[in-house]
Length: 139
Image (cartoon, rainbow, N blue to C red; front, side, top):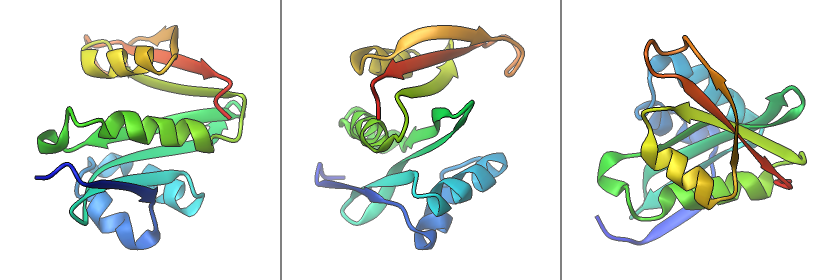
């Protein structure tokens, strides 16, 4: 896989390709994000290898609900590029997201991008608390 990449807004035509990277319980979230203009994809050689979904439904604030990079495309800056895209396209002052305590790479990325830890949710995934992060001045 080469390093050639493009970040672009996702369209309804991308739904199946993105869904193939998602657990089924997230398909509706992804489709709503696409319909609302809040989903972007990263391509390498014309193939979708990563996506981010953002909306403004978290208590009226921006929310990144999904960020995923295929394993073979990781460590190439795609996650950072997609998060920067979500930040730039956010229409609110605050942008929130979350990740599991076990997800060290995502925590490191969020720190690099200026997100601050703002809360913890227990019992979503047994034994792996969800850490909630905030980025001010996103939109």
